[in-house]
Image 1 (spheres, rainbow, N blue to C red):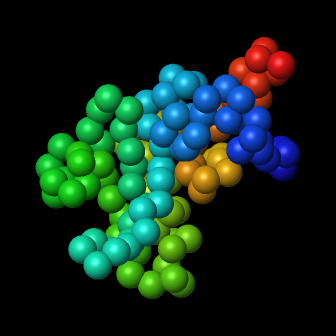
Image 2 (image 1 turned 180 degrees about the vertical axis):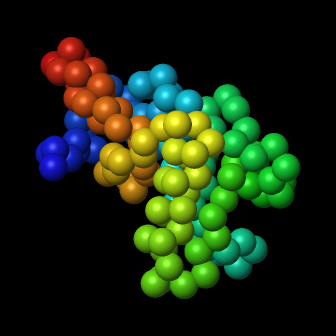
Length: 120
């Protein structure tokens, strides 16, 4: 398993969250976890970059395909469902986890490492 990229290294190239990683590396989407609050339940979301992954989604999901997580025990199962959905719908393998818990296409973090090296 590859060594994790530290948030401080990402901060040097002005990347502060999973969304910035996807935008900077030119990705189409990533998977993010949204914790529940008093208005919405917890969920994994397939978040599109300049594209809606679910145009019929409820307004609070902002056009993103979601996978509700009702219990702590099913969190990993729902993540796997989201990964499988992305593979089936877009043909993209999601295998890499960033420091904020977002999941990206295979190879994304290596591209990020190369960007960090260029900045040093």
